[in-house]
Amino acid sequence: MEELSPTITLVAPNYNESASLPEFYRRVREVMEKLGESWELVLVDDGSTDGTTEMIRELGKQDPHVRPVIFARNFGHQIAVTAGLDYSRGQAVVIMDADLQDPPEVIPDLVAKWREGYEIVYAVRTEREGETWFKLFTARLFYRLIYRITDVDIPMDTGDFRLLDRKAVAVLNSMREKHRFLRGMSVWVGFRQVGVSYKRAARFAGETKYPLKKMIKFASDAITGFSYFPLQLATYLGFLAAGLSILAIPVVIFTRLAGMQAFLGQATTLIAVLFLGGVQLISLGILGEYIGRLYDEVRDRPLYIVREAPDIE
Ligand code: UDP
Ligand code: MG
Image (tube, rainbow, N blue to C red; front, side):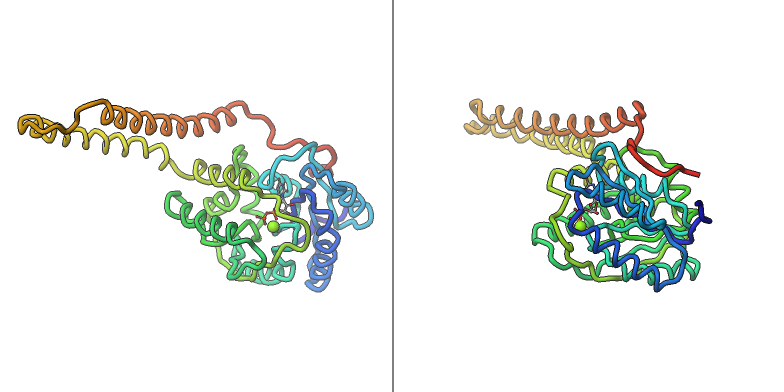
């Protein structure tokens, strides 16, 4: 039985969320029934190994609102959300985490702004509960850094929790870049955007699926995807080093003529060589980051592989 396409699609990526998922589903259902719009819930299983997969499959059987998309392995949060957008059919799509950090109760606020005519309504966290100081500190640093050096003005302290109009989803779905930083991409597309503030809750159960390693990859995708600044850094450092060495020439001549014992021995040479060698290696590494990403684009592998998913009409 195929119903008409719903007004609202909710997209939630799941990676080992078996402890949160039942409660997430219950609260989403409650909110959506009260809201009274037709809706669907796209649950993406990002290669879970803790029974989440079976849970999603079961929900799909019990409730026609639920559309399960099951990956062949773990592809990462941003890719899982991308798949959710691909399979969404609603006139508006809300992206949210499955761990209840993005409270479903905020959905009606997002929908209200959409009804006012905004095409992208992002949720801005005014407070964050139950996060470690390390997470808060790195997140703060991350948002400020990204704001500084990227070419798009990504609003501070917003995650992926947002509503996108179908128009914006269509554009995002046509952008098939491999290293995806969705909150940057969704600013880049333009449209009428507005923020709605909310209090970010603590994770309902389980622990974060974003260890430091994934956070670093996420940050470098954000930076390389939206800025050439790291590449230009080598140029700036080059000019700086060249400038300094030119300035050093008269200083050395003067000290020699004055008969001083400065700059004798290997230590100074060694320091200069190591310093420049370091700068060069770092620059090469940065170049490598961009080339690696370029390689991924050229190779053009699919963004994700689904094991089971509904047909895309
Ligand atoms: N997630 C995912 N794939 C991953 C890592 C995370 O689908 O490889 C999902 C996870 O299940 C959750 C959301 O992405 O619904 C956000 O992850 P998490 O809550 O662990 O991140 P945090 O809130 O700690 O930054
Ligand atoms: Mg979370």
